[in-house]
Length: 564
Ligand code: ATP
Ligand code: MG
Image 1: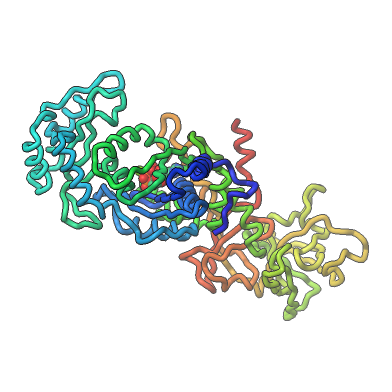
Image 2 (image 1 turned 30 degrees about the vertical axis):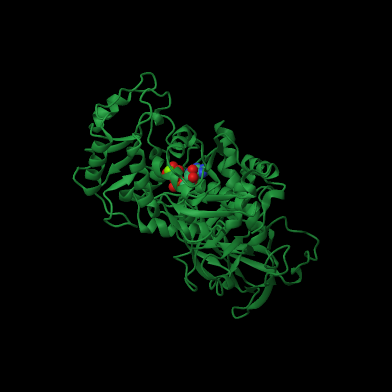
């Protein structure tokens, strides 16, 4: 993988600067071990891409290692589908983790021993307050909490009660193991946090071996320590948890001491980066699954036609800082335009066809014209464009009358067909309703790559496809899923801000014949329209289905400017 560190578009990355300094001063003996620690309770989204690029990127840059660990402490919300999807997404982004996939559940035995260790040292107790009582005892920002009446149980009593928890003698919520820290702490996370709770649930990795599960806070830092992670990188909301993680490390016989560094989450406007909300979109069937091309999930963005390089480039551009911010959706869209402008071959597609009859071409004539695969890459194959008597152009590219600003085909005037000849529109044919169904034209055979002999140069160039030799395609025009920059901001539900026009399906589009047989996930630029990809699942050679990745130009910028 290339290191983008020297890219002129790379934003600052304070974590990389910090590690470079640590290496310079001999800290960590130069060793850098990071991890990406998702909970398998949903698909990864674009926010996770930032964390993946950061963790894997640091390991690459400093000759270290990055692991993939599933923080799987909530059996009811997690499942194998998510585990598989997350691995596929990380690999698709272009990263490979060090060694086998790891699971926090691999350490359930050790974590259980750690819990016993705390109990034996008088640092943890089994509480039997109900959850309402526990809430009342906890206090709030202004009021210190009160000690639970169970807080001063003896070690023996606690060991016995914890054993009862482990063997399933308690119902869920009847008891919990809590760290004995400080109920009056100004940091709520230190008010005797729960470290083990009862869940009578099967776990996707450990089956029915356990009915007690460690809390995320108790598992996360210790798992990093067990794995010898040197740099525990996480998002800012965990800053207030760091004193708790340090307390655990101080009170447990852990084999190593990871150091946590927090960075600002990625927030993108016009979208949401919360698995919980994304799951609602899926569960309420507002979108067609986690990988719907409108979803900000990695698998959705992939189906939409984004490339791994575009996403990595985007993460480079935005950089890594110590504060949260909102990135404009146009920055991500610009990243994919940048990438596809170079990567995608050119092609022609007529989305809303109007038939043109070239009356000076014979019905059985097929002239094979050719066109470059790309304007400035000669490694892409030339395209073959059959030029025939009947062709299609976009309905919006013809008018009976127009002023000078309209640089397309007008009755009685000329236009150039892209990669082909100059034509003149002579006549129209209408149906009973007065709608134009055909335009009769003549072509000028001397104009392939040349201007007309009469010296009158047509102002416009329009795209076209042979009506007899082109192929039909279904084209799905995707747009942003939300119409508001901050979905759900204000009183409403985030679903109130959905963009009603996030998907427009165009049936009966016409594509140049060479495109009908491409494989799924082939990206092209439909000239004058935008970037498109053949759908990963729904496209088949001979039955083409294209998704719009992004329009050629940003149209939302103006909407935002008007809104401001
Ligand atoms: P969500 O809020 O969507 O549920 P999460 O933080 O609970 O996300 P995890 O599975 O715990 O999801 O995330 C794995 C890693 O990805 C964590 O280290 C987390 O900090 C990081 N991460 C999650 N969301 C973002 C984001 N928007 N920007 C940067 N990193 C993120
Ligand atoms: Mg989380």
